[in-house]
Image (cartoon, rainbow, N blue to C red; front, side):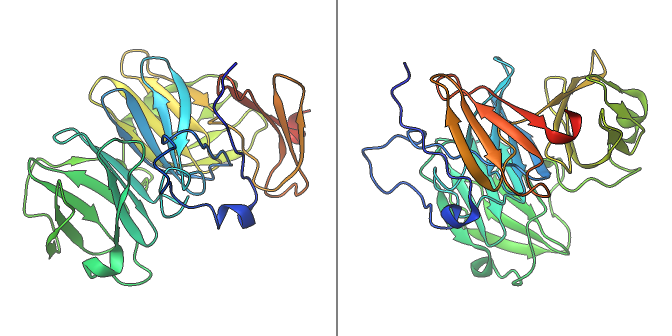
Length: 296
């Protein structure tokens, strides 16, 4: 039996008081927080994982070799918030970067021990957010609404603010999807499995509902990723040219009922508008699934 202690915080009230890990007795994933991801904001690839920034579920991690989701990075690991507007893995340094509405953070371990820099300290306006993160040989670039911030790639020290990057050949992670412009050929030519339909600028789920494309990314090893506004992650390859929908863990936000049957933890919600189904999680393996009321 897995002896790690897993703590499930789903309510927004509890999430607001869950902070990082100041106690050195705990490893980064001794405490794990699962919750609905919201829309997918940003995607990046590392050496062994894809990192997926979400609206409300922190940074999802997808194992590229095991082809499954593993423990997410949330406030339980030290993120300032569970809303991640952009994420980026710098292949030059091995550092993982993530931006929240008010901070830019980075981790050498790619798991915990997050260093945090307030965005206002970098000269950004209060309501401005980081939309995309990129890197060069020596620097990290943050794309805001109308400016680009240039940081040292190992310390996060601000180097300058520019209307456009003063470097070429930047390695960008994905940002907000621009319909008809970003990866248009892929979305016109690829198919999608699992009863979904791809129309070229949005997906249609098995129940006939439109799901807008929020972000898209093509990795260095033939992986193609797309994020949906409903929290679905779509994974394809440049050889097969077919997207497969992936549901990353529990999708509940307002948990009212929990039931553990000795192996599976079942999670039920009260508010149909924010959580439209029942989720289950196997705390020993990390496996999970989601059953929608509308499909039953």
